[in-house]
Length: 61
Image 1: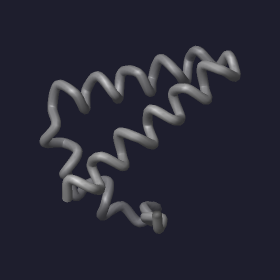
Image 2: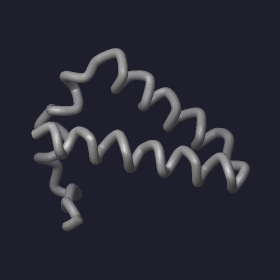
Image 3: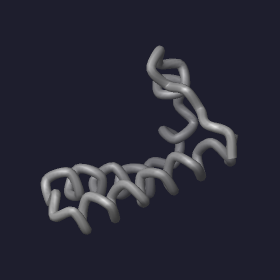
Image 4: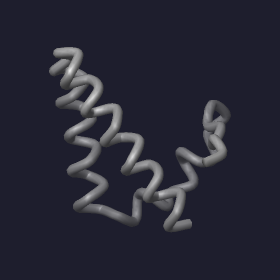
């Protein structure tokens, strides 16, 4: 499961950088808060709430 949680953090960081570059500071702020939450509470990265959501479709690396 560490692989999935690493991917969540990596993708969130990529999206943060993209939002910042596109001057979408509202979105960047939201993603920054998500990253901070993941850092403070690593156990939520393993939650089945995201992985079990109907819209969640993991992509192959």
